[in-house]
Image (cartoon, rainbow, N blue to C red; front, side):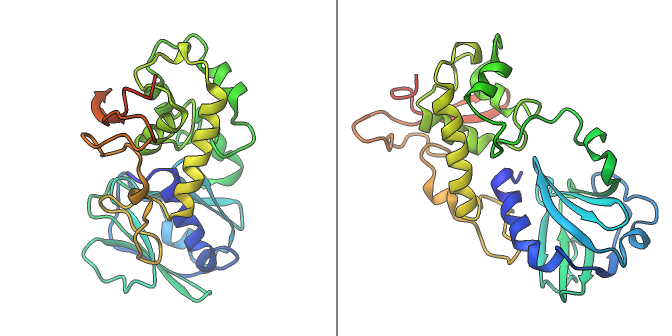
Length: 271
């Protein structure tokens, strides 16, 4: 599933085609994805102007004039492409804008989501109510982590993946951030002391990944169809059995399973 850097990369790629522009034509090829499309979806979207294109957690939000927001989640395999012909078997939504541009939503597994929500009520919507702080915001720092993780008896890896704690942070970037901070994924959250180093590492790895266009491991591509390349800079993720890249460590990257997810770390330098 695309994580925060991939969704942010897609958002930036879509800006020229969407923000400030109107949907001139919308074509819906099926009645549902993960959930049913809202009633009169095409009619409510056609002619609307995108006032602002933003991101919340792993969701893309296109705020429209007249007070509605187009909410998009890519799911496991969803992709938004600019300039695609829109005739593929799994091209489910085709949107033309006055940029001019054609934006195509493709999703062969259909785990994605596209819906309309009243903009003023979006924070209280079931999709967003209870989401944690954005990790790249000024609200996210050592003090925040100290406060929300106090007394938590779950491993720090699992705690950081909780979307009620941090919105948008996923498995790949938690592994990489914990490595950079030198913190073992096995350590209980309540026993972590180096929250300043951890907050800094999380922000840094996310920014580095966005700069690299995200990580293309399976289905993810940028809006222009190009692959991201942060996967070439992984320190530990998916590198089990390889030498630890930290100079002078001499350890070996290991894999373990936590809460059904693969965790990659160096047991020698992550304590």
